Image (cartoon, rainbow, N blue to C red; front, side, top):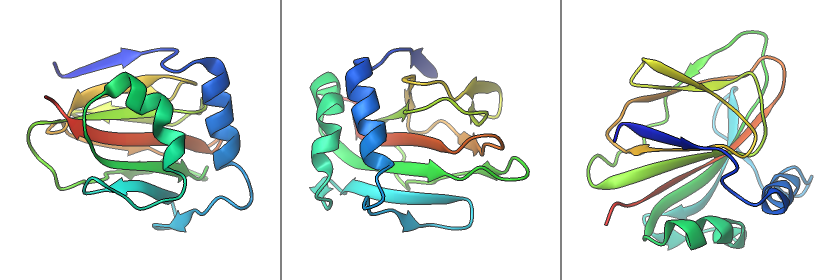
Length: 151
């Protein structure tokens, strides 16, 4: 499997609730650079956020142990920027990206296939696949990235 897309990955109510929580003024976002903000839920299999409950809809579907989970808030800009996020984990893991809103940003798989950011779409791929995120111009972009055991 190189990658797999699934539209309507979560129940619409779950997706809306998740997005609204992330958009609240008191949600703790952390600046990564001038292009995006990040909030880490789980790192090295340890829950490090009080907001880990937001992952419940995903853990019910994934059922495997989660190694890392973070949400990202890519800020719209004047031009599209290419962003690579390296999680430094190479083998025996799958990565799930879930888009909480539609935007003109996208993700490229192995610099070949360009997948648009579409509301409630999940993209699943082997962690050793090269992924590049293209930042949006028209609308901010919210997504969650979850790294979990294959087996």
